[in-house]
Image (cartoon, rainbow, N blue to C red):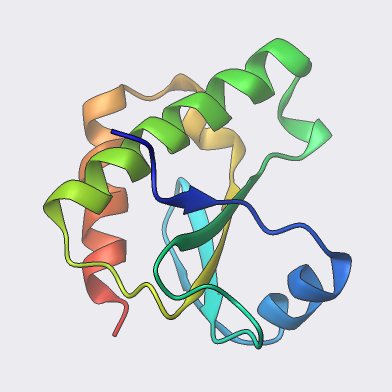
Length: 113
């Protein structure tokens, strides 16, 4: 089955999301809100890891984990597809187990209304 996830592409979209609502925990910060001219049948989400976290290998590992967790979340949690999401990873995420990160991310996605 083809994924229903689309990444944000324009810098204007990122700037608009940073001004809207956010949910945060010790592993990630999720900015979310409504964006104009977006497809509501697919999930608009982007993952950001800062260079401060580590080299490219470490940053890509974090992004792969987040993509994988999001794919599971789409199947298990009723996500709001009319929202656009921006997920920013924190350095504490690198040394934690996958299951712990998954549970906390699921809790945060359930909080979003």
